[in-house]
Amino acid sequence: MDPERARELLARERSRIEGALAAVRPDGDDGELAHVDQHVADAGSETFDAERDEGLADALRAELAAVERAEARLREGTYGTSVESGEPIPDARLQAVPHAERTVAEQQHYERS
Image (tube, rainbow, N blue to C red):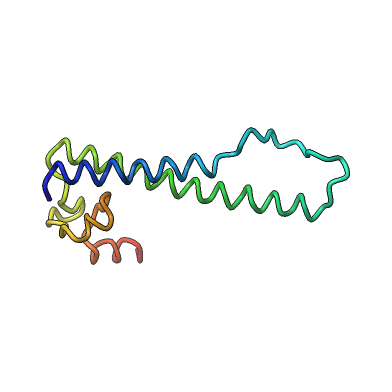
């Protein structure tokens, strides 16, 4: 893949992830209950939402770290090759997942292990 195209795809991916991370960050909630007479079910819903958002944030931070590793590989001249085997990662895969570190088959094997 052309390095300029890779930079563009990675920048777009970084922007998407950073925007999604900003959307799941708490909006200044200090953990205090807003109402003394709050129903226990409301507190349960808030806890569920906070845990769900933290899980999403964790996944997004992991994705952002993968983008950063891909940007480093681009600078080093190894972008587009598998970190496992050194085999080329097809351009179609990099178009779909710009921060891909492995070929599809290698990724499937990695996820099963």
